[in-house]
Image (cartoon, rainbow, N blue to C red; front, side):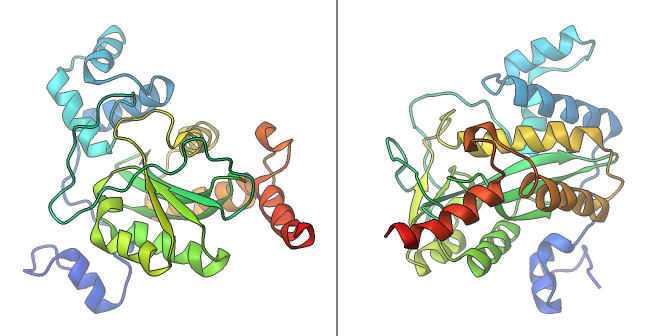
Amino acid sequence: MIDKMHGLSISKQAQILGISRSSVYYQAEPVSEPDLLLMRRIDQLHLDYPFAGSRMLQSFLVREGFEIGRLHIRTLMKRMGIEAIYRRPNTSKPAQGHKIYPYLLRNLVVDRPNQVWAMDITYIPMARGFVYLAAVVDWFSRKVLSWRLSITLETEFCLEAVEEALAHYGKPEIFNTDQGSQFTSIAFTDLLTKHEIKISMDGKGSWRDNVFVERLWRTIKYEEVYLRAYNNVPEARSSLGRYIDDFYNTKRPHSSLDRKTPDEAYFNTLQAIPLAA
């Protein structure tokens, strides 16, 4: 049904066929086995040392026996959608027609569900190949409200995740993301604006602006992803679904939530708000 050699883009073909773009499972540019191994290790190092750029990562990898140049590491980091996280002057400019919004969470007390939602994307290694995971998270309860997998970093799977969260949980007062092209796209910001949601964006390279989502990625990867070797995208979706929906949200206690689960923190507090008012 989908023809990658057709003149129409994959996204347009998926739209015409009435299917989700993120459900199209071919890998346009196969990655070599050595590069997949490097990417998995870079991902692990990035979680442990998020401040490490290509130069430091090269030093780590060379010490472990890898023969790799800094430019190759930068290429792989770009493919994975990761960069070093640290405070630096914001000299980046949005693409033409894209607007960067201010960061609204500094010194904000977040004390209730649906006050702030956050979203981010992370790289997920498989036995052969990789996918990207996008998640919408309630900042107060750490509950994963929705998530999607995709083989590309296009905007569509992010839009699908946000639309699902809005359909099931109402809307937040503030929606926070980084300055990635998916989140600064007109389609993404228009979706939030249409629902009268305030848009907040991290400072470029800030290590702390979206720290709760970064902690979520670390938890998911060390407790689920790195213990598996997903053979394909459906298997990855099924296994991640069991972890996120059946364990992380409903059974895993969080010390920062007084040992409550995200579901308990979200729904119990949400039910108490009208009574307190």
